Image (cartoon, rainbow, N blue to C red; front, side, top):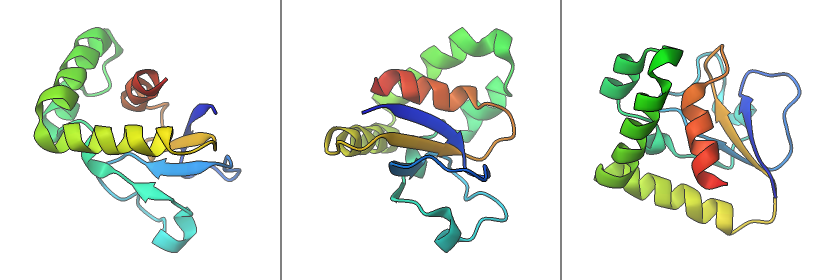
Length: 116
């Protein structure tokens, strides 16, 4: 099993267990067209942390530590991360973590690293 990250808007979609990990539903995608197995929105960073980070790569190390702390200490995020871990451990399929951002989403890379 491999854990992939993929933008939900890509034409060619990877096969496997498809999990959207964004807090907000992607614009322009109908729920039926997303072909999702799960949407675990609570695993995403809080709005405050996302706004603080603002995709500034210079802040990546600090962001990663703050996000990991959220996943340990914020009850909703902790439960969502445990749910995600369970989904990963319960399948032999490849895992596709989906996101909507235009750029390669650094936030989702942290999740990928934590799950491997």
